Length: 172
Image (cartoon, rainbow, N blue to C red):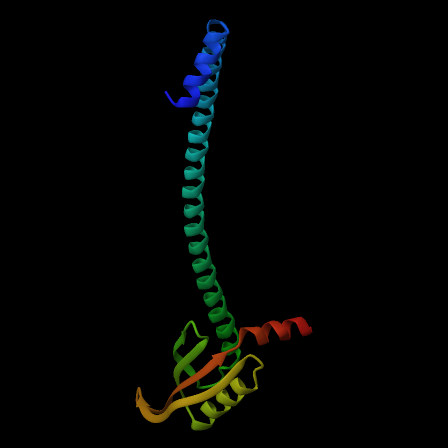
């Protein structure tokens, strides 16, 4: 026992209070231990709940990231469909598209062929006049034979600006 505790016990014995105070101290100690044990159990339960919530939060963050990826893919797919929907009406006469590609930077590559060089140039001019296409350039326009006919094969590269189509829609 420590010195202050020994002095306290001697003081209680000297005045005959030791036998009276001891049962109260024991009861107090038992009650304190029970309450402390309950609080300790509550703390452990709260720690367990916190751990469970942290795991659920991590799971929700992963799910949120997946949702963002899906939304971005959907946005890109919608932009590709919108751009193709705006290009199709411009295809006239002998013009035929062989391929259409759209990347995540909104860059479009169109390959195809037309009966005349003039048809290819007119198609490019129409694309340039469209409010939501920029940087319309031909990578090549080459004359070649296709099924025994002279045609002009082409590859056109341009940028689609989805914000401009939204602006155009909001103007109307």
